[in-house]
Image 1 (cartoon, rainbow, N blue to C red):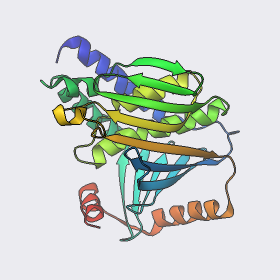
Image 2: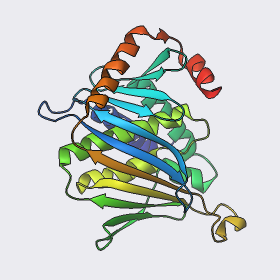
Image 3: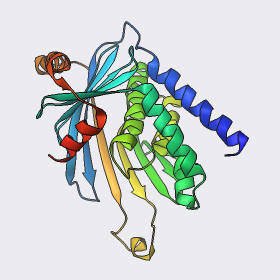
Amino acid sequence: MKAWRLVALVAVIVAGMTYASETSPPSLPAFKVESRVDLGEAEKAVTSSITIFSRTKVFDFLEKPAEVTIIDWRDQRVVLLNPLHHEQTELSFDTIFRFQERVQARALQDKDPRQRFFANPAFTIRMDSTEKELVFASNWLTYRVKVSDTVDPALIREFLRFSDVMAQLNCLLVKGSRLPHPRIKVNKTLLERNLFPEEVILINGPRNFFEWLPGRRSIVRSTHHLVLELTPQDRARLTQAEEWTQTFRRVNFIDYQAKLAAE
């Protein structure tokens, strides 16, 4: 790898580790975001989740497959809980970010321009003020993000840094998944403009002749509903998740993933 690329890559990884290790301000109240993922032009639910934010941790409760992800800012780690099999595993931030370093380095050297783009994305960005939509356009993929400019910037920051870590974590967890750097770049722009993403539509660019045809492009839609107060049920979820971290059997990451994939 050329020296300038290596320096830039290390700078990105180090910056990400610093950002992810910070705890939230003491005055920040607990809140949650209800998310849903759909495929295609029509709303076809793939999965949904409830993400609860506290000052030092984020608890993400995924519906399908049933799994709880705990991001621990203070201890710089991610804990994965499998309620069905009463198992848990743990990944350090360092492991996640170093994995991204290797994957990004390989993609930057790939002969496929699509892979090089995912490793170092560049978008044309425009704002549609009427629709309150921010568009990130490229030949390889486009994000259309409906935004709100009325959300507390501190809450936006918490949600976006969670999104950054999850994008990197999913790249490690899901074989063949897209590199996280395009979404991280989108999040960076949202953070700079203090905008909360209420809906994110990802449209993949055509990879062959057939995907140029109407209705053939891959479209993924995610919606995010911010709720400022927790319910008693939410607090019960937090208590249960913390109890699971004390009682579930600890297994290595490979074994944990194999059992979850078999469900």
